[in-house]
Amino acid sequence: MKFVRTTFALVALSAASSHAAMINDGSEANLNEIINGTLLVAGSSVDVLGDTATNQATTNPYFRSSPDSSNSSATFLIEITGGLSSQSFGIYNGSDYIQLFSGADEGSYTTSGSYVGPVVDNATRAQVSFDISGGSYSVYVNNTKAGTFSSNEFGFYLGRGGAPLVYSDSELNGGTERFVAIQGKGQYLNLGSEINYGCAADSLADCTLWERDDYILGFEDGSDSDFNDLLIYVEDIVAVPEPGTLALLGLGLIGLGAARRKKA
Image 1 (cartoon, rainbow, N blue to C red):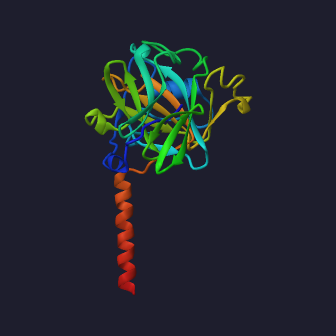
Image 2 (cartoon, rainbow, N blue to C red; image 1 turned 45 degrees about the horizontal axis):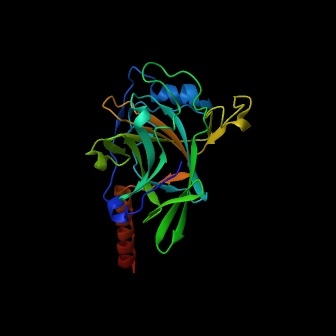
């Protein structure tokens, strides 16, 4: 998966924040069933239903590539929505966007009922990397330059044909959270036969290691808040600290400086 967006400027990022979202268990396969019952091969299970303030999902809107990796990658997983043929996926930075997947890129899916079957059979994957040049960041997707960002930070978006985009930043959705991310903790996943051929509990070397800088992303394109309308697996990214955290850190540093001056 590749990330794109140029003029997202740090000022715009600093104004963003995430809020808690409620992940519902609807009539379709829910996030717990999909992740624990379909993707997870070995390791601790996840609990992502209910309030993101208390479960293992986050609504943090912005990320950057992991400092331990020269690029990031995204794998198309599952769509459970009637609008799958018109959906697209990508990254953005301010007003700059880079599309990674289109409606022609489809994982395994069902539009209703329970999800059954392999995760993905078409190895739909994109790699994204950044190259610093003259104060801007060139964004490469599968080794081809796809655009330029003003920083190496990015959010994710879901395209829905002619409908408004769905953003990882709730402020761009009119204050509604339509995005969640679930962080890995050393589990093993089966991302499908084309990617993890032979993956099984007794053959973990053939599976994907879900590390702490890897996330499963879930989007909500409607109103049922099940966040299974598009699932993407993204490797080698880290969350950008939220403005509130940065503000508290700044206050802490100011307090530390005041304490040192008083002691002196």
